[in-house]
Image (cartoon, rainbow, N blue to C red; front, side):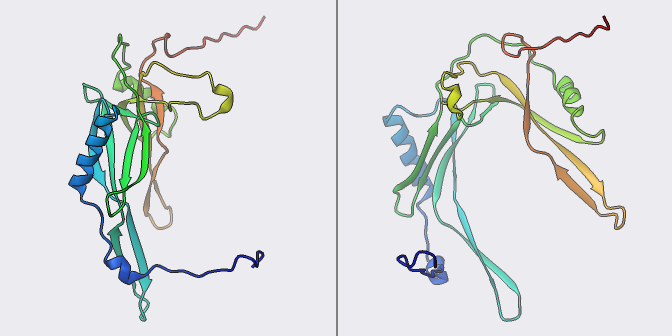
Length: 220
């Protein structure tokens, strides 16, 4: 113990107390969240409520070496899933609303990053086929491409201090994608599936929102 003024204390989870743990009623959590956000003028514009729980799992090994586990929900979380009037998802750090409750209904966490948005104008969307062709160039030839059309909502404030003046006021459509490849072990023949990280490309070539660079070369 490097800091002898602070003694080391050993603690452990009481499995008996774990068995008696309860969470707040899901319907009560949904209704409370709606009333709270409505009265404060923060009711999400395009949000659909969802309720879930953080689950804690305890693992143990008995005298015979057998692994056992038991799980229990430890809180109640209400969150929102966003989409526009056409059903296109709005995702990203600027489209997040979550309220977490303890077992007695007290709020233990409140996260709100959401905009009021209005439709203004339109852009020509790149076809899904064209988007797949562009994305395929980034992967091996046998990669299966998964993609969907979304609106990416950036954070309400910049994460990097030198970009304090950055304040995007236009949200454009993007294609969210990832690639799936299958590789076989040459010795055993076992097939492994690899999934890439999720990435994005603009779903439009409109130069007003997606700048392009044209380069040329000459031997002169």
